[in-house]
Length: 218
Image 1 (cartoon, rainbow, N blue to C red):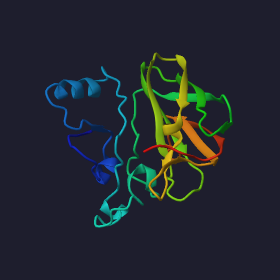
Image 2 (image 1 turned 135 degrees about the vertical axis):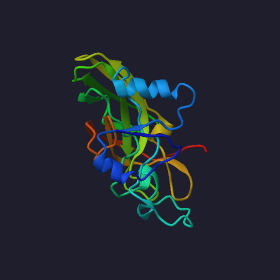
Image 3 (image 1 turned 60 degrees about the horizontal axis):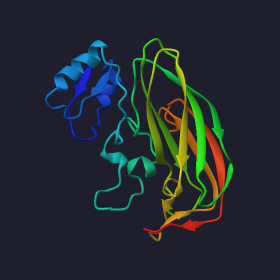
Image 4 (image 1 turned 90 degrees about the horizontal axis):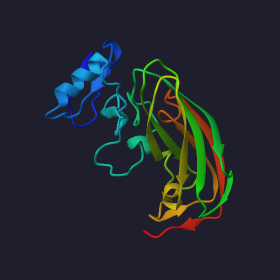
């Protein structure tokens, strides 16, 4: 077991291969020791998620003289990180099912409404952080994906709950190459689950379409 106390991402490749578990405590301050002890003993069931990407090393990143976003952060990084943004484990397990969209074709300016059921499939009660990631139409400047909603829910063993997400204009928007916040017309894909799509996290995924393009005020 390795306990990390740090303020940013670390390339803990050796530990990932050899340690039974890694607990990220960041800078835990006064009650940090108690919190760590309770988590290691199982009194506390962890539910934190990484707010940054843990890369395997600086060789995965562009030179720091380059200020462009390409290749940086989970939104534009195309490689396989050590631990992705939004990653986190628990002493229990969760599943997702029953993804439902109110409408699969919306006019620009209308909200997207999605519902999904999450179930604690393990034997221990705990929190799950359901994350909604959005991928945009193929337009210049679009990120690979963007976190556009999350909900933390406490579930007893075997308990299920329906989650409701509503994405409005700002949630559906991106910044174009010209620096304008826009909702582009076209087909979008999205996922809801315990992490990013294509990272091993359990998710449910779907698509929808926006009709019309809208430029938002800055």
